[in-house]
Image (cartoon, rainbow, N blue to C red; front, side, top):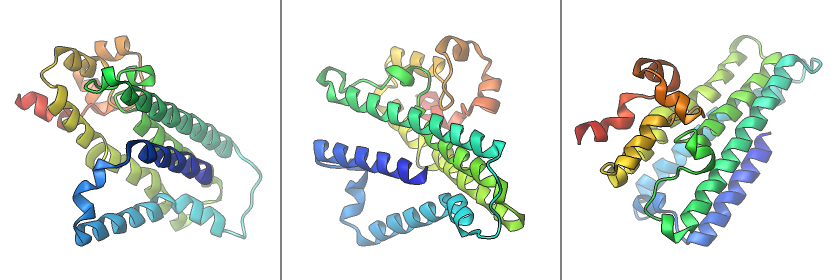
Length: 221
């Protein structure tokens, strides 16, 4: 599952960089060797931590139980997650290829139901890999839960949603249509816009991750 996920994402990113010719996320790091080193060191720590379920399962030679319900549930979760992530990536890429949509936020396909469906898919697939590993975990090996925990925390509070929300608000915050899109669209978990838009704010915050930091710039404006 991890290899299939990695191959899909690697090929997608390779083709995208060949098409675009650059990755602006690296612009502030290429010319600074210290910043570049820190960036790749943190990437290595991230990969090691997120891979814990795989490392532990493949390092256990004494326990090999029959396929259990948790295995099947984990596989299904992974399948759903990687499918949503792949569809979301492709739909956003297609929008960016359209010259008429260069200055528009992505609100097509699964992006109508979630402002960050690719991140939802990423979190869900790693949760699935962890769930599939649980039949063989014992004692301290349950520390493998750090895998889905880390990826969730990073995307919710550090390098994922907060940065993209701030960027989107800066570009489109003055557009009433963009504000309406944010108000009716779930930040992470895909939900019908009519349903999400009708929910009370406290429920969105507590259960659907609509945190105030995602609207900090809009609130300031």
